[in-house]
Image (cartoon, rainbow, N blue to C red; front, side, top):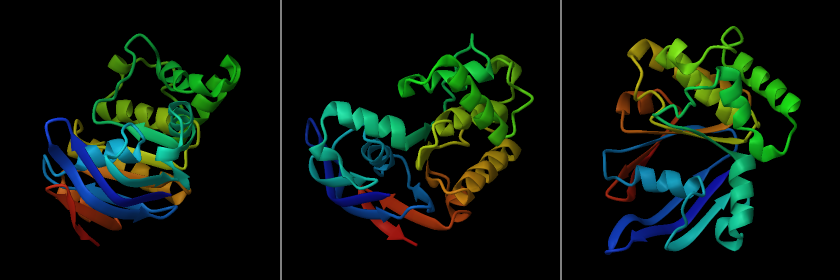
Length: 219
């Protein structure tokens, strides 16, 4: 699903965030990318998510060499093959749960009725079938993160990138979100959890530890 080969990312000013990183993530894996602030986690997320391109090396997502694609084709790859979940929920305050998830399907070109059907199915999948008409302020933190996850998976992307998905949640809600991610993985989605929390990382089958822009450990 993901293959990084000799990937280096250097920013203007000479700051190198990743140094010659090699990483392979197979289809169907559930893995953590873990490390302290400044270790290169965010840079790796941006590269795997095709939000950025490496200074050197090769990034392949689902068999596609990102460097060989036009910006338009990269955008299409990202929209169809990658789902994103962030620490901040990024939900529109004026839209109910169904509308927030359906809006995430606008890129597909599906009609309004089809978008709402898929959104309703995704919300049911994350256990929110009874919260379709609730707006974000009427939902708990854990429920809002579930809406964000539903939005990310409504288009059935094979890869889900979860960036600190429990960072704004209490421990109970955080455990619920992790169980949800495990369930999505069991159904076939490749899930990468980017986190600084070693307890979360230890609970996942594979842990890729970054330090100073390099892979320090992969177990």
